[in-house]
Image: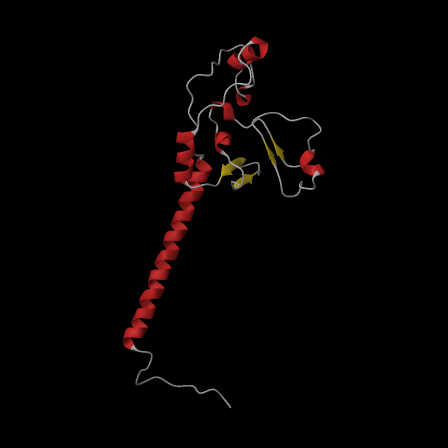
Length: 169
């Protein structure tokens, strides 16, 4: 509601590993798993990061578009944030609840232990591979063009069979 109220509904999406109220509207994606608390990719997002959302039914991907080096740096630097509570009923719930993708059930013990940040999603790896291939193709074209320019410079632009066209007066 705050996004729409600020007039940003056409250019901002709400992405959360949590839940949101029924009053939310616009482009909203919730229950992203694995959650940030346990090292899910959403934990590595920083303000200003470019994010690609492909909401088509056959795709349904959310990709953080940062370099492999930056991704790995963030993974290495990441550590679980402290729990907001360390006693009582909510703490017991935190210690036993499964992720949203597992149904948030509490009848299976799901202790939060030593966790690491998630690896890059396959969609981002595929995109980066395709970008690298296209960049290599462009470099090859640039090399071919430079080779052609060098050949013209070495051979000269004039030839005995060349025809000179003069502009009309």
